[in-house]
Picture 1 (cartoon, rainbow, N blue to C red):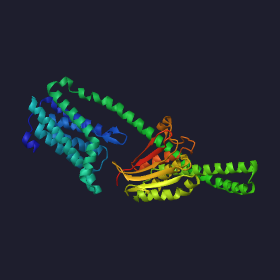
Picture 2: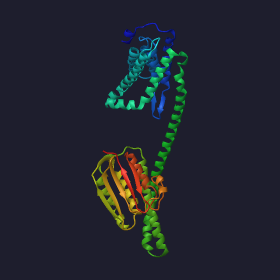
Picture 3: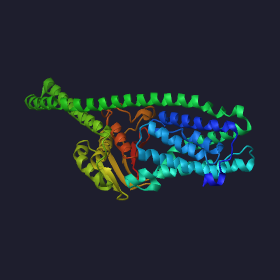
Picture 4: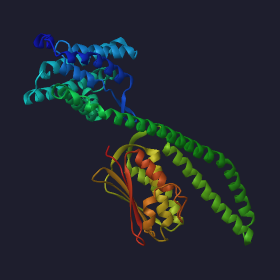
Length: 424
């Protein structure tokens, strides 16, 4: 249709130079895709294809664009079906440009508007056809694929379209300045080098974090057996030496061993929470989960003279990893019991908030100093009440579920930790 409508009229001699430039440009773009993110690339091949469609005769521009993509795909050893599909996609888009917005020897405002609209249609058609094979192969929604691709690539696509329009118009109106839009290429090169460096750094950080998780898991397992032996022997000694300095020393050792046992358990929990394995999601009733935690800590709270009170404003259910989420709530309750004075109460409230379900744990403890709040949820932030791992575990678990955790505190008036989870 483009060839019949636009014909093969003789073009200005210099315009035929666009053909080898288009082939070379598409080949280079295919060989060196531009990164616009650590895991995201964009092909600059649309730029020379658009210029060819805008400047060459209607019977030659689309053919040049389509053939250049076909050749470049074959050189990159893509499969023939994929190469032909990509070339056909480009051919259709370039034909639309040639039909609607090809730039002649002279331009005016109306021509500029038509060319701009044609370039926009090229980008839309190219994207719409480009995601079709992926949607068909996966069986997923085409609209979802299209929305995701458009969201990721629209800034780069519009930039390429604007650059192609600028080059084409300048080639006609001010040929000396036609190459000026290409000054962005050195900046793109530097940006790609920076992204590559960041990607390498991310890989190194991921390796360090994986090694740290393995270390935490290995240490907690290796220390567990000798610690159990030590605690058994201390239990025997405590029965034999009930009074005097020896008895006090044994009692202190038992208390420290118990504290080490709790810390090892939390190290294992932290390593488990850090793992990148998918969450074992199931439908969880938050009111029932909170009730389980209360039952587990009732004896410990009673020993400390602290009461546990549950307030259920709603029975929200969410898809979550029940064990991990229970661990997060249990750590908040454990901290609250430890800081609460004898005769106080720790209150757990389950409700449905403005954003989603929430679990709040409030205590009547001494509160938290303002200078500790910025680093409160960091690991090994020691306090008088524990190892500094409980809050770090809680935050990590909540974040993996897509939620947030916050604290409201006032010195001398207690603290309230609130977990907010996404709905569903």
